[in-house]
Structure formats: structure tokens, C-alpha cells
Amino acid sequence: MLSRKVVEIGSGRGSCERAQGNSPGDLPDVPVMPETLLLMDLSAQEESVDLEKMTLVVLSDPGATIQIFRLAARERAFGEERPNRMEDCISALGVQACVEAVSRRTISRAKDKPVIVQAWSHARETAENCKVIAEELAENVGPNEAYLTGLLHELGSLPTILEWEPTAAVSSDPVFAGLKLAEEWFLPQCVVDYFSELLNLKAADQWTGILRQAHKMSESPTFGSPLDDKQESRVIAFGKS
Image (cartoon, rainbow, N blue to C red):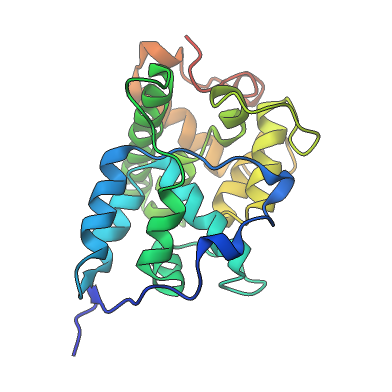
């Protein structure tokens, strides 16, 4: 009998090729760090995959995280229900399908702008800070949800940093764009709620408050000063110096 940390996962319910074409605005794939793909590929070759370990690998990379959530949305892996846990997505889709999803584009340190690598590092650091803050609050804030919110908190800046062609499907405003992508890519509710708070669509400021604290912990000169209020956060973009 398998332990909770180990799960037998087949090749997946279907290939990513079949699922492609239904993404909002046919937006490009989000790149993934090469080391993330390598670790996932090695794990996929094992008969017994450690689901917890695989999940940690994926969640260390905002690109891999987005690609798998996008695949789950295309495949309708959870019907009309919004997935909130990466391990559920990996189990439902299968490891091989997830590897295919993240392998569509990797970040080349030689060709891609360094700002992309810096942005991914900033997202991961912010996510870790958010998780620590949530654990210290000991309130109705899930550490894993806080991590996801931090990891994807600059989602709306992807079109700029990745130099996507302008499209009517995504607003030029990073906050509006973030909400649009979070909703249409069927990302976890905590990410949707974060952008809704920034747009004053929700009275609560649970996630924006956590992000403000997370940025204060970072003190990263690359990405400017921490968030002071919702209005300031509207102009934050990946790679801003």
C-alpha cells in the first residue's frame, strides 16, 4: 500500500497537444527554468513518484506552476471547480502530461534577458515570505495559499516581461491583466482574490496586506521599494528597476 507521499502516476489522461488551442487569447506558453524541467523529467522516469517532492519542484517555479494550472483548465480536470492545490493537478493530469506542459519553453540563460531569471527568483522569494507570514498569523490564512499568491502576485506583468505581442485579450494595466489571466486560466481562488483586492472589488485586504509585509522582508533593490498601498502596486512590473 502506497504512503501518502508516494503515488503511482501514469502517463496522464491525454497529451498537451490535444489540449492546446483553447487557452484565452492563444497566449504563449510561460517559460520554465531548465533545472525545474530536469528535476521533473527525472521524477517522471520513476515508477513510484513522490508527489510531495514533485509538487515542491513545480511550486519553486512560477512558469511551471502556471503551465500546469493552465493545462488543468484546458483539460477540465476538475470540471467547473477551480483547483487550489498543485498536488491535485499533478495527480489528475499525470506526471508525463505535466512534464510536457512545462517543457514547451525553457528559460535560456544565454539568450533570454537576465530580468526573467531575476523575476522568477523574486517571485519565489516573495512566495516564501508570504508563507512565513501566514504561518505566523495563525489565522484563517492558509500558508500554501499564501505561497501561491506570492508566487503569482505579478501575473499581470508577464506580457511585458516576456514581450508578448499586444492582444485585446489582456489589458495593458498589470492589475487588470492579472485578474483577467487568473480568472481565465482558472488559477486558485486566492490569486483571483488578491487581484480583486487590488482593484477594490473586495472589501477585505487580506492578501494585499500579506504581500506588503512580504515585500518589506525582501529588500530587493532590483524590484524597487515594497508596496505601500494598493495604488502603488498597480505600477509594479516584473523587471522594474
